[in-house]
Image 1 (cartoon, one colour):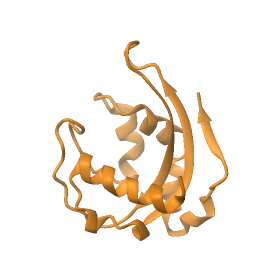
Image 2: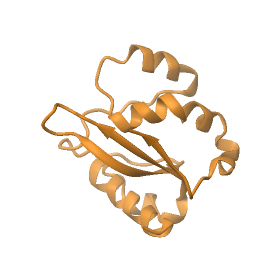
Image 3: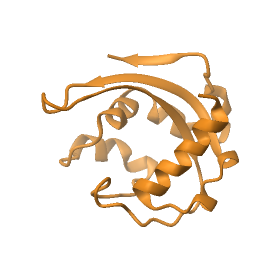
Image 4: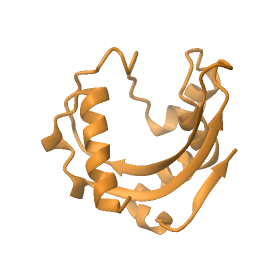
Length: 127
């Protein structure tokens, strides 16, 4: 998939899962950072094994969550992130937990220069 098509697909997915209007997620607003390959056994019957594109989108958006996809949304500030992750009792998606463990703090601390971390050739493996 080319980056432009990845950005359009991300907008459609945000619309479907979070109800964010497509006009708030136009492709040029996304910053394509890198890709990850991860595996999670899930409950033993259903699991995940996929390559995901990591994109950043900054801005104010309107949420109208799809309850079949999202059970809860919570804003966590950067200074409270570590404490949140340590004390989180509700399950987090496997891909988010891996990104939080390996990259999120560095990326978040460098949002003003996120282009330093663009890596369009690598796939970071977590399997």
